[in-house]
Image (cartoon, rainbow, N blue to C red):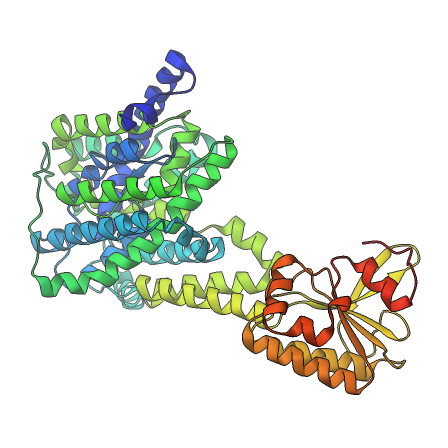
Length: 556
Protein backbone atom coordinates (compact mmCIF):
# COMPACT_ATOMS: atom_id res chain seq x y z
CA UNK A 1 0.00 0.00 0.00
CA UNK A 2 1.07 3.59 -0.66
CA UNK A 3 0.94 4.50 3.03
CA UNK A 4 3.69 2.01 3.86
CA UNK A 5 5.80 3.19 0.91
CA UNK A 6 5.47 6.77 2.10
CA UNK A 7 6.31 5.80 5.64
CA UNK A 8 9.35 3.65 4.78
CA UNK A 9 12.43 5.69 5.73
CA UNK A 10 15.49 5.61 3.56
CA UNK A 11 17.79 4.82 6.49
CA UNK A 12 16.29 1.46 7.57
CA UNK A 13 15.59 0.80 11.25
CA UNK A 14 17.71 3.73 12.42
CA UNK A 15 15.85 6.05 10.06
CA UNK A 16 12.52 4.76 11.41
CA UNK A 17 13.63 5.53 14.97
CA UNK A 18 14.55 9.07 13.94
CA UNK A 19 11.17 9.52 12.26
CA UNK A 20 9.33 8.28 15.36
CA UNK A 21 11.27 10.70 17.57
CA UNK A 22 10.57 13.50 15.08
CA UNK A 23 6.84 12.68 15.15
CA UNK A 24 6.72 12.87 18.96
CA UNK A 25 8.71 16.11 18.89
CA UNK A 26 6.39 17.57 16.26
CA UNK A 27 3.36 16.69 18.39
CA UNK A 28 4.86 18.25 21.52
CA UNK A 29 5.53 21.49 19.67
CA UNK A 30 2.38 21.49 17.61
CA UNK A 31 -0.54 20.54 19.89
CA UNK A 32 -0.78 24.08 21.37
CA UNK A 33 -0.59 25.53 17.86
CA UNK A 34 -3.41 23.26 16.66
CA UNK A 35 -5.60 24.73 19.39
CA UNK A 36 -4.48 28.15 18.21
CA UNK A 37 -5.38 27.43 14.60
CA UNK A 38 -8.85 26.35 15.72
CA UNK A 39 -9.09 29.65 17.61
CA UNK A 40 -8.12 31.54 14.45
CA UNK A 41 -10.74 29.63 12.42
CA UNK A 42 -13.49 30.35 14.96
CA UNK A 43 -13.96 26.61 15.53
CA UNK A 44 -14.26 24.62 18.79
CA UNK A 45 -10.72 24.15 20.07
CA UNK A 46 -10.88 20.35 19.91
CA UNK A 47 -11.41 20.56 16.13
CA UNK A 48 -7.82 21.78 15.83
CA UNK A 49 -6.72 18.41 17.19
CA UNK A 50 -9.09 16.64 14.80
CA UNK A 51 -7.25 18.20 11.84
CA UNK A 52 -4.12 16.24 12.79
CA UNK A 53 -5.88 12.92 13.38
CA UNK A 54 -6.98 11.47 10.02
CA UNK A 55 -5.79 14.09 7.51
CA UNK A 56 -2.04 13.36 7.90
CA UNK A 57 -2.65 9.63 7.41
CA UNK A 58 -4.76 10.25 4.29
CA UNK A 59 -2.00 12.39 2.78
CA UNK A 60 0.66 9.84 3.70
CA UNK A 61 -1.36 7.19 1.87
CA UNK A 62 -1.78 9.10 -1.40
CA UNK A 63 0.67 12.02 -1.54
CA UNK A 64 4.19 11.85 -2.96
CA UNK A 65 6.05 14.28 -0.69
CA UNK A 66 8.03 12.53 2.07
CA UNK A 67 8.14 15.68 4.21
CA UNK A 68 4.96 17.77 3.80
CA UNK A 69 2.99 17.97 7.07
CA UNK A 70 -0.76 18.28 6.48
CA UNK A 71 -2.97 19.68 9.25
CA UNK A 72 -4.61 22.98 10.23
CA UNK A 73 -2.88 26.06 8.89
CA UNK A 74 -3.16 29.74 9.77
CA UNK A 75 -3.80 30.97 6.21
CA UNK A 76 -6.80 28.77 5.46
CA UNK A 77 -8.04 29.17 9.05
CA UNK A 78 -8.10 32.93 8.57
CA UNK A 79 -10.05 32.54 5.31
CA UNK A 80 -12.69 30.50 7.14
CA UNK A 81 -13.01 32.99 9.97
CA UNK A 82 -13.30 35.97 7.62
CA UNK A 83 -16.04 34.37 5.49
CA UNK A 84 -18.04 32.10 7.80
CA UNK A 85 -18.40 34.54 10.69
CA UNK A 86 -20.94 36.41 8.55
CA UNK A 87 -23.06 33.26 8.14
CA UNK A 88 -23.09 31.80 11.68
CA UNK A 89 -21.77 32.44 15.18
CA UNK A 90 -18.17 31.18 15.55
CA UNK A 91 -17.98 28.02 17.62
CA UNK A 92 -21.65 27.12 17.09
CA UNK A 93 -22.80 23.79 15.58
CA UNK A 94 -24.00 25.68 12.50
CA UNK A 95 -20.59 27.27 12.08
CA UNK A 96 -18.87 23.89 12.42
CA UNK A 97 -21.20 22.48 9.77
CA UNK A 98 -20.29 25.32 7.40
CA UNK A 99 -16.58 24.74 8.04
CA UNK A 100 -16.92 20.99 7.38
CA UNK A 101 -18.85 21.66 4.17
CA UNK A 102 -16.17 24.12 3.05
CA UNK A 103 -13.54 21.43 3.60
CA UNK A 104 -15.63 18.96 1.57
CA UNK A 105 -16.02 21.47 -1.27
CA UNK A 106 -12.29 22.19 -1.15
CA UNK A 107 -11.62 18.44 -1.36
CA UNK A 108 -13.85 18.26 -4.46
CA UNK A 109 -12.00 21.13 -6.13
CA UNK A 110 -8.67 19.49 -5.38
CA UNK A 111 -9.94 16.20 -6.81
CA UNK A 112 -10.97 17.96 -10.03
CA UNK A 113 -7.54 19.61 -10.14
CA UNK A 114 -5.96 16.15 -9.87
CA UNK A 115 -8.20 14.65 -12.55
CA UNK A 116 -7.36 17.44 -14.99
CA UNK A 117 -3.69 17.57 -13.89
CA UNK A 118 -3.84 21.18 -12.76
CA UNK A 119 -0.80 21.06 -10.50
CA UNK A 120 0.77 23.75 -12.67
CA UNK A 121 -1.72 26.27 -11.22
CA UNK A 122 0.62 26.58 -8.26
CA UNK A 123 2.98 28.54 -10.51
CA UNK A 124 0.45 31.39 -10.85
CA UNK A 125 0.61 32.44 -7.21
CA UNK A 126 4.09 33.86 -6.82
CA UNK A 127 6.26 33.84 -3.72
CA UNK A 128 5.77 37.60 -3.62
CA UNK A 129 2.01 37.17 -3.29
CA UNK A 130 2.38 34.41 -0.69
CA UNK A 131 4.69 36.57 1.43
CA UNK A 132 2.23 39.44 1.25
CA UNK A 133 -0.74 37.17 1.93
CA UNK A 134 0.82 35.59 5.01
CA UNK A 135 1.97 38.99 6.27
CA UNK A 136 -1.58 40.33 5.97
CA UNK A 137 -3.01 37.28 7.72
CA UNK A 138 -0.42 37.69 10.46
CA UNK A 139 -1.39 41.33 11.05
CA UNK A 140 -5.09 40.46 11.00
CA UNK A 141 -4.76 37.57 13.45
CA UNK A 142 -2.38 39.45 15.78
CA UNK A 143 -4.85 42.32 16.15
CA UNK A 144 -7.72 39.87 16.73
CA UNK A 145 -5.78 38.18 19.57
CA UNK A 146 -4.96 41.40 21.41
CA UNK A 147 -8.41 41.53 23.02
CA UNK A 148 -7.94 38.28 24.95
CA UNK A 149 -4.31 39.16 25.69
CA UNK A 150 -5.30 42.50 27.25
CA UNK A 151 -8.55 41.37 28.86
CA UNK A 152 -10.62 43.65 26.61
CA UNK A 153 -13.89 42.39 25.17
CA UNK A 154 -13.97 42.72 21.39
CA UNK A 155 -17.14 42.02 19.42
CA UNK A 156 -16.13 43.41 16.00
CA UNK A 157 -14.99 41.11 13.20
CA UNK A 158 -13.40 43.69 10.93
CA UNK A 159 -9.72 44.42 11.65
CA UNK A 160 -10.13 48.20 11.65
CA UNK A 161 -13.15 48.00 13.97
CA UNK A 162 -11.27 45.60 16.26
CA UNK A 163 -8.39 48.07 16.48
CA UNK A 164 -10.86 50.85 17.35
CA UNK A 165 -12.48 48.76 20.09
CA UNK A 166 -9.03 47.96 21.48
CA UNK A 167 -8.14 51.64 21.60
CA UNK A 168 -11.39 52.48 23.40
CA UNK A 169 -10.94 49.62 25.87
CA UNK A 170 -7.36 50.41 26.92
CA UNK A 171 -8.44 52.24 30.13
CA UNK A 172 -10.18 49.02 31.24
CA UNK A 173 -7.50 46.44 30.41
CA UNK A 174 -6.90 43.63 32.88
CA UNK A 175 -3.53 43.94 34.63
CA UNK A 176 -2.99 40.27 35.55
CA UNK A 177 -4.10 39.16 32.08
CA UNK A 178 -1.69 41.58 30.42
CA UNK A 179 1.21 40.43 32.61
CA UNK A 180 0.56 36.74 31.92
CA UNK A 181 0.20 37.35 28.16
CA UNK A 182 3.42 39.33 28.07
CA UNK A 183 5.31 36.59 29.90
CA UNK A 184 4.00 33.94 27.50
CA UNK A 185 4.95 35.94 24.40
CA UNK A 186 8.40 36.71 25.81
CA UNK A 187 9.00 33.07 26.75
CA UNK A 188 7.99 31.72 23.33
CA UNK A 189 9.96 34.31 21.34
CA UNK A 190 13.02 33.86 23.55
CA UNK A 191 12.70 30.10 23.19
CA UNK A 192 12.57 30.36 19.39
CA UNK A 193 15.78 32.36 19.49
CA UNK A 194 17.75 30.36 22.05
CA UNK A 195 16.38 26.80 21.67
CA UNK A 196 14.16 26.49 18.57
CA UNK A 197 13.80 22.70 18.97
CA UNK A 198 12.47 22.91 22.53
CA UNK A 199 8.62 22.77 22.75
CA UNK A 200 8.36 26.03 24.70
CA UNK A 201 4.69 26.51 23.81
CA UNK A 202 3.85 23.11 25.29
CA UNK A 203 5.83 23.94 28.44
CA UNK A 204 3.97 27.23 28.72
CA UNK A 205 0.62 25.43 28.43
CA UNK A 206 1.55 22.90 31.11
CA UNK A 207 2.85 25.54 33.52
CA UNK A 208 -0.19 27.78 32.91
CA UNK A 209 -2.63 24.94 33.58
CA UNK A 210 -0.78 23.98 36.76
CA UNK A 211 -0.72 27.60 37.97
CA UNK A 212 -4.38 28.09 37.10
CA UNK A 213 -5.44 25.05 39.14
CA UNK A 214 -3.13 25.81 42.04
CA UNK A 215 -3.88 29.51 42.44
CA UNK A 216 -7.36 29.74 40.91
CA UNK A 217 -6.43 32.36 38.32
CA UNK A 218 -10.08 32.69 37.32
CA UNK A 219 -10.65 34.43 40.67
CA UNK A 220 -8.33 37.18 39.44
CA UNK A 221 -10.67 37.84 36.52
CA UNK A 222 -8.84 35.66 33.97
CA UNK A 223 -11.11 33.85 31.52
CA UNK A 224 -10.49 30.12 30.96
CA UNK A 225 -11.03 28.28 27.69
CA UNK A 226 -13.43 25.88 29.44
CA UNK A 227 -14.13 22.17 28.94
CA UNK A 228 -12.84 20.48 25.79
CA UNK A 229 -14.58 17.24 24.82
CA UNK A 230 -12.24 14.27 24.62
CA UNK A 231 -12.49 11.05 22.70
CA UNK A 232 -12.79 10.39 19.00
CA UNK A 233 -14.72 12.70 16.67
CA UNK A 234 -18.10 11.64 15.37
CA UNK A 235 -17.99 10.93 11.64
CA UNK A 236 -20.31 12.60 9.16
CA UNK A 237 -20.98 16.36 9.29
CA UNK A 238 -24.44 17.89 9.27
CA UNK A 239 -24.64 19.38 5.78
CA UNK A 240 -26.36 22.75 5.27
CA UNK A 241 -28.95 23.55 2.62
CA UNK A 242 -28.04 23.84 -1.05
CA UNK A 243 -28.48 27.62 -0.97
CA UNK A 244 -25.88 27.85 1.77
CA UNK A 245 -23.56 25.47 -0.08
CA UNK A 246 -23.48 27.85 -3.04
CA UNK A 247 -22.45 30.65 -0.66
CA UNK A 248 -19.50 28.52 0.43
CA UNK A 249 -18.13 27.88 -3.06
CA UNK A 250 -16.10 31.14 -3.18
CA UNK A 251 -14.73 30.40 0.31
CA UNK A 252 -13.66 26.92 -0.79
CA UNK A 253 -12.17 28.46 -3.95
CA UNK A 254 -10.01 30.79 -1.86
CA UNK A 255 -8.85 27.86 0.30
CA UNK A 256 -8.16 25.85 -2.87
CA UNK A 257 -5.91 28.58 -4.29
CA UNK A 258 -3.92 28.94 -1.08
CA UNK A 259 -3.57 25.17 -0.62
CA UNK A 260 -2.41 24.62 -4.21
CA UNK A 261 0.19 27.41 -4.02
CA UNK A 262 1.40 27.03 -0.44
CA UNK A 263 1.59 23.23 -0.39
CA UNK A 264 3.37 23.09 -3.74
CA UNK A 265 5.85 25.79 -2.73
CA UNK A 266 6.61 23.99 0.54
CA UNK A 267 6.97 20.49 -0.93
CA UNK A 268 9.10 21.81 -3.83
CA UNK A 269 11.44 23.70 -1.52
CA UNK A 270 12.12 20.77 0.79
CA UNK A 271 12.33 18.24 -2.06
CA UNK A 272 14.99 20.42 -3.67
CA UNK A 273 16.92 20.49 -0.40
CA UNK A 274 17.09 16.70 -0.32
CA UNK A 275 17.33 16.26 -4.12
CA UNK A 276 14.08 14.31 -4.25
CA UNK A 277 11.40 14.19 -6.92
CA UNK A 278 7.76 14.93 -6.18
CA UNK A 279 4.57 14.36 -8.13
CA UNK A 280 2.48 17.51 -7.65
CA UNK A 281 -0.65 15.85 -8.99
CA UNK A 282 -0.26 12.99 -6.49
CA UNK A 283 0.16 15.56 -3.71
CA UNK A 284 -3.04 17.26 -4.85
CA UNK A 285 -4.86 13.93 -4.60
CA UNK A 286 -3.44 13.45 -1.10
CA UNK A 287 -4.58 16.93 -0.08
CA UNK A 288 -8.04 16.21 -1.49
CA UNK A 289 -8.31 13.03 0.59
CA UNK A 290 -6.99 14.86 3.66
CA UNK A 291 -9.66 17.56 3.39
CA UNK A 292 -12.38 14.97 2.77
CA UNK A 293 -11.57 13.02 5.95
CA UNK A 294 -11.16 16.29 7.88
CA UNK A 295 -14.67 17.29 6.82
CA UNK A 296 -16.08 13.94 7.85
CA UNK A 297 -14.44 14.03 11.29
CA UNK A 298 -15.62 17.39 12.59
CA UNK A 299 -12.51 19.31 11.56
CA UNK A 300 -11.99 22.09 9.01
CA UNK A 301 -9.82 22.80 5.98
CA UNK A 302 -6.29 21.40 6.17
CA UNK A 303 -3.23 22.42 4.21
CA UNK A 304 0.40 21.53 3.68
CA UNK A 305 1.81 23.78 6.38
CA UNK A 306 5.21 25.46 5.82
CA UNK A 307 5.79 26.03 9.55
CA UNK A 308 4.87 22.50 10.62
CA UNK A 309 6.86 20.98 7.76
CA UNK A 310 9.87 23.01 8.88
CA UNK A 311 9.31 21.80 12.46
CA UNK A 312 9.30 18.15 11.33
CA UNK A 313 12.41 18.71 9.23
CA UNK A 314 14.32 20.35 12.10
CA UNK A 315 13.25 17.48 14.34
CA UNK A 316 14.87 14.99 11.94
CA UNK A 317 11.80 13.65 10.12
CA UNK A 318 12.64 12.23 6.70
CA UNK A 319 9.46 10.36 5.73
CA UNK A 320 5.71 10.34 6.24
CA UNK A 321 6.20 8.03 9.22
CA UNK A 322 6.77 11.29 11.12
CA UNK A 323 3.23 12.44 10.27
CA UNK A 324 1.72 9.10 11.22
CA UNK A 325 3.42 9.19 14.63
CA UNK A 326 2.27 12.80 15.00
CA UNK A 327 -1.33 11.68 14.39
CA UNK A 328 -0.89 8.88 16.94
CA UNK A 329 0.26 11.37 19.57
CA UNK A 330 -2.76 13.57 18.88
CA UNK A 331 -4.95 10.49 19.35
CA UNK A 332 -3.42 9.96 22.81
CA UNK A 333 -4.14 13.59 23.70
CA UNK A 334 -7.77 13.24 22.59
CA UNK A 335 -8.30 10.04 24.56
CA UNK A 336 -6.55 10.95 27.78
CA UNK A 337 -5.35 14.55 28.09
CA UNK A 338 -8.13 16.98 27.12
CA UNK A 339 -9.49 17.31 30.68
CA UNK A 340 -6.72 19.57 32.06
CA UNK A 341 -6.99 21.92 29.07
CA UNK A 342 -10.15 23.47 30.51
CA UNK A 343 -7.96 25.28 33.06
CA UNK A 344 -5.87 26.98 30.37
CA UNK A 345 -6.33 30.80 30.49
CA UNK A 346 -7.67 32.24 27.25
CA UNK A 347 -4.96 34.89 27.40
CA UNK A 348 -2.29 32.15 27.22
CA UNK A 349 -3.86 30.58 24.13
CA UNK A 350 -4.27 34.05 22.57
CA UNK A 351 -0.60 34.80 23.28
CA UNK A 352 0.44 31.54 21.60
CA UNK A 353 -1.66 32.43 18.55
CA UNK A 354 -0.18 35.95 18.63
CA UNK A 355 3.35 34.52 18.36
CA UNK A 356 2.20 32.36 15.45
CA UNK A 357 0.76 35.46 13.77
CA UNK A 358 3.85 37.64 14.11
CA UNK A 359 5.93 34.71 12.88
CA UNK A 360 3.95 34.86 9.64
CA UNK A 361 5.30 38.34 8.93
CA UNK A 362 8.39 37.52 6.90
CA UNK A 363 10.46 40.62 7.61
CA UNK A 364 13.67 39.09 6.25
CA UNK A 365 12.16 38.34 2.82
CA UNK A 366 10.45 41.73 2.61
CA UNK A 367 13.71 43.46 3.52
CA UNK A 368 15.63 41.49 0.88
CA UNK A 369 12.91 42.09 -1.71
CA UNK A 370 12.82 45.88 -1.37
CA UNK A 371 16.20 46.78 -2.96
CA UNK A 372 16.21 43.79 -5.33
CA UNK A 373 12.72 44.22 -6.77
CA UNK A 374 10.85 47.37 -5.63
CA UNK A 375 7.83 46.52 -7.78
CA UNK A 376 7.39 43.11 -6.16
CA UNK A 377 7.97 44.65 -2.73
CA UNK A 378 5.10 47.09 -3.36
CA UNK A 379 2.92 44.21 -4.58
CA UNK A 380 3.62 42.28 -1.36
CA UNK A 381 2.71 45.32 0.79
CA UNK A 382 -0.49 45.97 -1.16
CA UNK A 383 -1.45 42.32 -0.78
CA UNK A 384 -0.73 42.42 2.96
CA UNK A 385 -2.78 45.59 3.44
CA UNK A 386 -5.70 44.22 1.42
CA UNK A 387 -5.75 40.95 3.34
CA UNK A 388 -5.44 42.62 6.74
CA UNK A 389 -7.86 45.51 6.31
CA UNK A 390 -10.27 44.57 3.50
CA UNK A 391 -10.58 40.79 3.74
CA UNK A 392 -8.70 37.59 3.14
CA UNK A 393 -10.67 36.49 0.07
CA UNK A 394 -10.59 39.96 -1.46
CA UNK A 395 -6.87 40.18 -0.74
CA UNK A 396 -6.20 36.90 -2.54
CA UNK A 397 -8.19 37.98 -5.60
CA UNK A 398 -6.49 41.39 -5.67
CA UNK A 399 -3.07 39.78 -5.32
CA UNK A 400 -3.65 37.39 -8.21
CA UNK A 401 -5.01 40.17 -10.43
CA UNK A 402 -2.07 42.46 -9.62
CA UNK A 403 0.41 39.63 -10.26
CA UNK A 404 -1.10 38.91 -13.66
CA UNK A 405 -1.23 42.61 -14.53
CA UNK A 406 2.42 42.95 -13.58
CA UNK A 407 3.31 40.01 -15.77
CA UNK A 408 1.26 41.39 -18.68
CA UNK A 409 2.92 44.77 -18.22
CA UNK A 410 6.36 43.15 -18.49
CA UNK A 411 5.31 41.53 -21.78
CA UNK A 412 3.58 44.70 -22.93
CA UNK A 413 6.67 46.84 -22.27
CA UNK A 414 9.57 44.35 -22.33
CA UNK A 415 13.25 45.16 -22.08
CA UNK A 416 14.54 46.37 -25.42
CA UNK A 417 18.16 47.08 -26.33
CA UNK A 418 20.52 48.07 -29.11
CA UNK A 419 23.62 45.87 -29.32
CA UNK A 420 27.01 47.50 -29.84
CA UNK A 421 30.52 46.12 -30.12
CA UNK A 422 33.12 47.20 -27.57
CA UNK A 423 36.80 46.62 -28.42
CA UNK A 424 37.57 45.17 -25.00
CA UNK A 425 34.26 43.76 -23.69
CA UNK A 426 32.77 42.39 -26.90
CA UNK A 427 29.03 42.78 -27.37
CA UNK A 428 27.35 45.25 -24.98
CA UNK A 429 23.82 46.63 -24.80
CA UNK A 430 22.53 50.18 -24.60
CA UNK A 431 18.94 51.40 -24.22
CA UNK A 432 16.82 51.23 -27.37
CA UNK A 433 16.42 54.98 -27.69
CA UNK A 434 16.79 57.21 -30.76
CA UNK A 435 20.42 58.09 -31.40
CA UNK A 436 21.81 54.67 -30.55
CA UNK A 437 23.03 52.42 -33.34
CA UNK A 438 25.30 49.39 -33.65
CA UNK A 439 27.56 50.94 -36.26
CA UNK A 440 27.09 53.41 -39.12
CA UNK A 441 24.29 52.10 -41.28
CA UNK A 442 23.28 49.25 -38.94
CA UNK A 443 20.94 48.92 -35.95
CA UNK A 444 20.95 45.56 -34.16
CA UNK A 445 17.76 45.71 -32.09
CA UNK A 446 16.80 43.17 -29.41
CA UNK A 447 13.14 42.85 -28.36
CA UNK A 448 12.79 40.97 -25.05
CA UNK A 449 9.39 39.24 -25.34
CA UNK A 450 7.09 37.36 -27.68
CA UNK A 451 5.33 39.53 -30.23
CA UNK A 452 1.59 39.64 -29.65
CA UNK A 453 -1.31 41.97 -30.24
CA UNK A 454 -0.62 44.20 -27.20
CA UNK A 455 3.07 44.97 -27.75
CA UNK A 456 3.35 44.80 -31.56
CA UNK A 457 2.76 48.52 -32.08
CA UNK A 458 5.37 49.33 -29.42
CA UNK A 459 7.82 47.11 -31.31
CA UNK A 460 7.10 48.87 -34.61
CA UNK A 461 7.17 52.38 -33.11
CA UNK A 462 10.51 51.73 -31.42
CA UNK A 463 11.98 50.27 -34.62
CA UNK A 464 10.88 53.36 -36.57
CA UNK A 465 12.31 55.65 -33.89
CA UNK A 466 15.68 53.88 -33.97
CA UNK A 467 15.88 54.12 -37.76
CA UNK A 468 14.70 57.73 -37.94
CA UNK A 469 16.81 58.92 -35.00
CA UNK A 470 20.10 57.25 -35.95
CA UNK A 471 23.03 59.67 -36.42
CA UNK A 472 23.88 57.99 -39.76
CA UNK A 473 21.46 56.81 -42.45
CA UNK A 474 20.37 53.27 -41.62
CA UNK A 475 20.65 50.65 -44.36
CA UNK A 476 19.96 47.57 -42.23
CA UNK A 477 17.72 46.91 -39.21
CA UNK A 478 18.52 43.48 -37.77
CA UNK A 479 16.07 42.15 -35.18
CA UNK A 480 17.78 40.03 -32.53
CA UNK A 481 14.96 37.52 -32.00
CA UNK A 482 16.34 35.15 -29.34
CA UNK A 483 13.59 36.24 -26.90
CA UNK A 484 10.79 36.05 -29.47
CA UNK A 485 9.26 32.59 -29.37
CA UNK A 486 6.13 33.23 -31.39
CA UNK A 487 4.18 35.88 -33.28
CA UNK A 488 0.40 36.04 -33.27
CA UNK A 489 -1.83 37.12 -36.16
CA UNK A 490 -2.16 40.78 -35.13
CA UNK A 491 1.56 41.17 -34.48
CA UNK A 492 2.35 39.59 -37.85
CA UNK A 493 0.23 42.22 -39.60
CA UNK A 494 2.17 44.95 -37.78
CA UNK A 495 5.51 43.37 -38.78
CA UNK A 496 4.38 43.19 -42.43
CA UNK A 497 3.49 46.90 -42.33
CA UNK A 498 6.88 47.68 -40.75
CA UNK A 499 8.69 45.75 -43.50
CA UNK A 500 6.83 47.76 -46.17
CA UNK A 501 7.49 51.09 -44.46
CA UNK A 502 11.21 50.43 -44.06
CA UNK A 503 11.52 49.19 -47.64
CA UNK A 504 10.14 52.54 -48.85
CA UNK A 505 12.89 54.19 -46.78
CA UNK A 506 15.48 51.94 -48.47
CA UNK A 507 16.08 50.13 -45.20
CA UNK A 508 16.43 46.36 -45.32
CA UNK A 509 15.25 44.27 -42.38
CA UNK A 510 16.54 40.91 -41.20
CA UNK A 511 15.97 38.61 -38.22
CA UNK A 512 18.81 36.84 -36.41
CA UNK A 513 18.69 34.01 -33.87
CA UNK A 514 15.38 32.81 -35.26
CA UNK A 515 14.14 29.65 -33.52
CA UNK A 516 12.24 26.88 -35.30
CA UNK A 517 8.97 27.82 -33.58
CA UNK A 518 9.34 31.47 -34.58
CA UNK A 519 10.22 30.48 -38.14
CA UNK A 520 7.05 28.36 -38.32
CA UNK A 521 4.94 31.33 -37.20
CA UNK A 522 6.64 33.66 -39.70
CA UNK A 523 6.07 31.15 -42.50
CA UNK A 524 2.41 30.73 -41.59
CA UNK A 525 1.69 34.47 -41.35
CA UNK A 526 3.50 35.40 -44.58
CA UNK A 527 6.35 37.28 -42.87
CA UNK A 528 8.99 34.99 -44.39
CA UNK A 529 7.67 35.60 -47.87
CA UNK A 530 7.62 39.37 -47.31
CA UNK A 531 11.10 39.64 -45.85
CA UNK A 532 12.76 36.95 -47.93
CA UNK A 533 14.00 33.64 -46.59
CA UNK A 534 17.56 34.83 -47.23
CA UNK A 535 17.07 37.43 -44.47
CA UNK A 536 16.25 34.95 -41.69
CA UNK A 537 19.24 33.63 -39.73
CA UNK A 538 19.68 31.23 -36.83
CA UNK A 539 22.92 32.91 -35.75
CA UNK A 540 23.96 36.51 -35.35
CA UNK A 541 27.28 36.27 -37.17
CA UNK A 542 25.52 34.89 -40.27
CA UNK A 543 23.24 37.95 -40.36
CA UNK A 544 26.18 40.31 -39.90
CA UNK A 545 28.10 38.55 -42.67
CA UNK A 546 25.27 39.34 -45.09
CA UNK A 547 25.03 42.90 -43.79
CA UNK A 548 28.75 43.45 -44.30
CA UNK A 549 28.77 41.61 -47.60
CA UNK A 550 31.56 39.29 -46.43
CA UNK A 551 32.46 36.79 -43.72
CA UNK A 552 32.56 38.50 -40.35
CA UNK A 553 34.97 37.60 -37.53
CA UNK A 554 32.30 38.35 -34.95
CA UNK A 555 30.66 35.47 -33.14
CA UNK A 556 27.68 34.88 -30.93
